Image 1 (cartoon, rainbow, N blue to C red):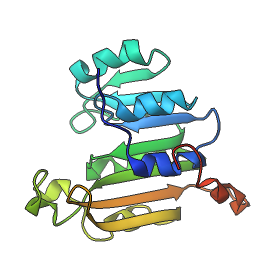
Image 2 (tube, rainbow, N blue to C red):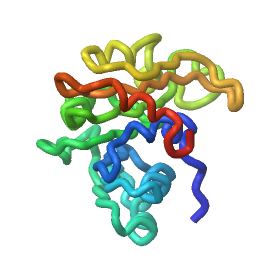
Image 3 (cartoon, rainbow, N blue to C red):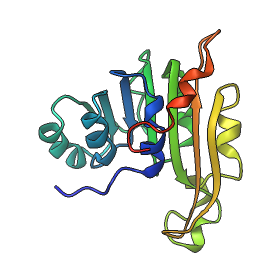
Amino acid sequence: MLLAPPSAWVRRFAGLIAPGGTVLDLACGSGRHLHWLAAQGWRLTGVDRDAAALAPLAAACPQAELITADIEGGPWPLAGRRFDAIVVTNYLWRPLWPALLDALAEGGVLIYETFAAGHAQYGRPSRPDFLLERGELLRLCEGLRVVAFEDGIEATVPRCVQRIVVMREPPGTPTARLAVLDGPGG
């Protein structure tokens, strides 16, 4: 199975994930990030509603916990669980934000990247329901430490994107971990 490479945004900030930590890849699809994250040694949980997309991952990433769930129409399948990192790319379902942020452990990092307003001129998605408004990720992540944020047009493959990396810092956490920005893939 030939996969697209992992997002440069995910690779750039993966060094912030605690070594050996637990990572949730939400709406993981065919698993391009799951494969890469597994190779880095993290413990993985992948969630997607497409059982056909997850099936090949069971053999390719046997160490990953794979959950088939309709997170838009059904209950949140990870109630009460916390992760050291959450990775989300090319996916937006606003009603999920409270559960998503609740699943981020103290000291955890959220690496998020998806399409933004204006993207309709380049293709799909084009419905406003699936496009972030200007600065929306900053508002959604209010109260968390913002490590990085981008909102604009990506020139290499024209598309409007918004990206954020935030951390839920435990009280009294030193900021030294931020020096790891040149970690795996950086």
